[in-house]
Image (cartoon, rainbow, N blue to C red; front, side):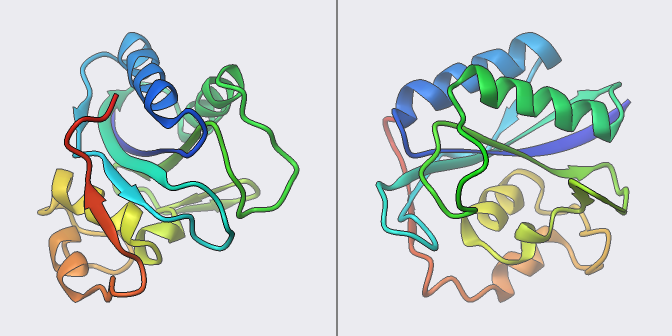
Length: 162
């Protein structure tokens, strides 16, 4: 059984889609560990603000099976694919970490590079698993967050989401 970390994001009907995604993940994978929900401005395009968080759970699925299952959940929530990388989305579920696996294949890279690029991924991940070491960087997620320059990526916790 692998410990997995998944980022959850939405800026279209975000309260409903995040709540529904969390319920679906809990039904399919059991108990979820969850970071706080953060509100962030859209990155890379002009759009409505996002809700972002990270969840952790255990899974017997392979990374490929899990990534496919996450895509199916996105699709059931109205996710539109094929447009720009930076665009509004009803639901975005990204497999960030799968134990300490390092993997690079078409459509699936672990650990997900966005961990080290975006505050809305690293901050909730560090909140959830600060003592965990990044499989490539070698530092703990808490240390990586402390060193991260988030000045250009403001975010704030949401008190009453979903």
